[in-house]
Image (cartoon, rainbow, N blue to C red; front, top):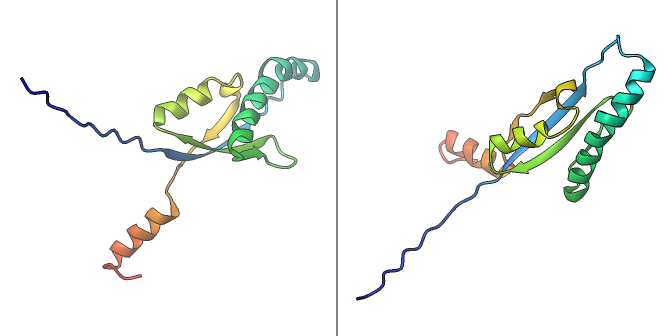
Length: 118
C-alpha cells in the first residue's frame, strides 16, 4: 500500500492597525482618586503598551497630552480587541483603530485603477 503525501500551505496574513487612544477626562475624579487610578489602571496599562512598543519601536505618548498611538501587527481583528481589552484602562480610553494598507498595495491598487499605468 503506497502512502500519499498531502501538502497544506497555510497563509497567515499580518494586519497592521494604527491604534490611537485618548484618555476620557472625568471632572468628578479628585486628585487623590486619580492617584489610585494611576496605580491600579494607568501605570499597568502604560507598562504593557511600553513593552509592546519597545519590542517593535512602534508607538508612544503624544508629547504633553493624555493620548498616544501604537502600530500593532496582528493576524486578526479579534486579536486587536483581545489586546486592547486586556489593558486595565481599556474602558477609560476613547480608541480609534483603522487598519493600515501597505504602500506597495496602494501603488498596485492605483496602478490597476489607471489601467496598469503609473
